[in-house]
Length: 232
Figure 1 (spheres, rainbow, N blue to C red):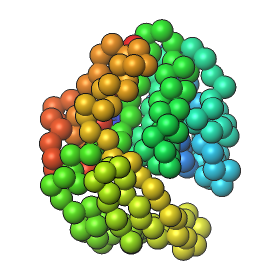
Figure 2: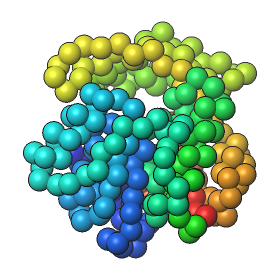
Figure 3: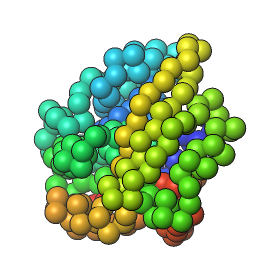
Figure 4: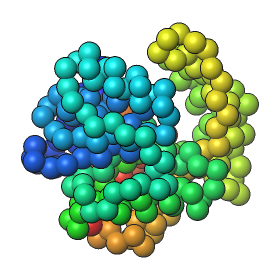
């Protein structure tokens, strides 16, 4: 998939194409980024809470002839400490999907703990500036035409910056499923403060253009997601 290629190009640039670095993919799902990075020669550990997603990720890795260490873990309680040079968490891979701010913070804390002293953390999350200027419901309706998932019953709460919605989608096997979501949008200053409190020294936030991450994309109110690059 072309999206993976552009996003993994950015990740490679950020780590200086150093194949000796160890990477953890948090909320890896069916392994989109893990598999693409493994193809490029990186050592990847992919973690997810969903057994069915991990099973599919393992099948895809085998089909494509690459080795990825897929493991089942809850991102709020990772067993790793100071093991990885880079943590990635893309496309709402856990963070921002939790029902409380405390649980979301646990994910950030565990990702940080898994990193070595000079580790780097790259993740995307929902941009809290977007719903101040746009209807989230209308945005989901416009994107539903482009893919195989649709969002219904959206309700954004300005007091909590949370959107409650139901996603209707087809899985890899063609089965229709419904998923109730409670998603937290973050504003840049909040994220900066959270990451500083975890010991990150350098925090950069950009607009996240799917499939084409770039440091040249200044975050605006038009960006539905933001791309965060934090360094210890």
